[in-house]
Figure 1 (cartoon, rainbow, N blue to C red):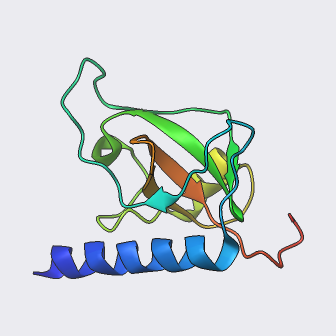
Figure 2: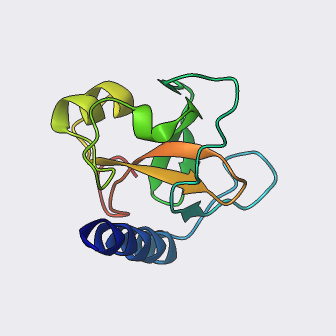
Length: 119
């Protein structure tokens, strides 16, 4: 029950963030939205690898995850990153969260408010 509440809260906060900040194509030609983490399909990739190429989606910069997002070190059971992980992945002190994109990709969402100095 505790896990389902956390997942529900995560979904609500991600949707609220996407609505508040809007979405951008990031140059891909398609409109992307941040959604809940997609289940890992058990494919060839073992573990978790977080890419270094960030893409803007709304006010956030997101980094793609290859492999199983639940295997990513430095995130709690609700998917929130610890400070050191967020600083390493996001290259700043911003908070971060495991998330998904509407195109079926799992990502690390480096969150920021639209009014932050980064924008």
